[in-house]
Amino acid sequence: MSVRILALVGSLRAGSHNRQLAEAAVKLAPAGAEVELFEGLAEVPFYNEDVDVEGSVPAPAARLRAAAQAADAFLVFSPEYNGTIPAVLKNAIDWLSRPYGAGAFTGKPVAVVGTAFGQYGGVWAQDDARKAVGIAGGKVIEDIKLSIPGSVTRFAETHPVDDAEVAAQLTEVVARLHGHAGETVAA
Image 1 (cartoon, rainbow, N blue to C red):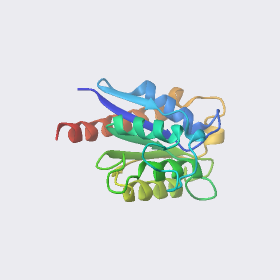
Image 2 (image 1 turned 180 degrees about the horizontal axis):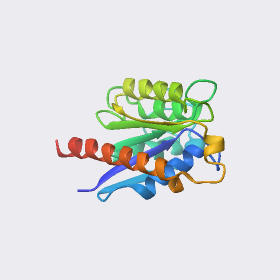
Image 3 (image 1 turned 90 degrees about the vertical axis):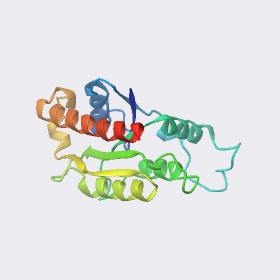
C-alpha cells in the first residue's frame, strides 16, 4: 500500500532552505511512501468566504484542495517570519480547513518541521503551524519535530540532502509520518 504525503512549504523563495528540506524529503521517502511537493501556494488567493462558493472556488485554491484531498498525510515546512508562521502557509491552512468540519486535513496525520536562521530553528512558527493545523482538523503528530537552526550558514554551500545529520533526521521524520499515515489508511 502506497502512502501519499503532501509537502507544503511556507516560503515562496526559489532558494528557500525550507524548500530544499522539502526536496530532500521527496528524495529520502521510504519505500511505500510518496512525498509530493505542492507547487503553487503563491497563486492561492487570500481566503475569503465570499469566493469560497461551490462551483466557483478560484482555480489555484481548488488545485490545492484536490491535492490535499488525495493525500494521506501532510508534511509542513515552516520558516519563521517575525516570530511566527508565514502568511502563505497560514492561508493554505485556512483554505484546507473548509468546508468547516470536513476540510482536507480532517483526521489525517500532520508533521511540522523546518529551518530558520535563528538559534532555535523556527520553533515558534512551527508551534503556531501545529496549532492552526490542529484547529483545522489535522491529526498533528506532536512528537515528530525537526527544527534546524542557523539555516543561512548551515546550508550556504550544502543542500540539506547532502548534510548527513539533517538527511538522517529528515529520513526518520518521513518514515515516522509514513507509519502514522499507514495506520490511518488501514483503519
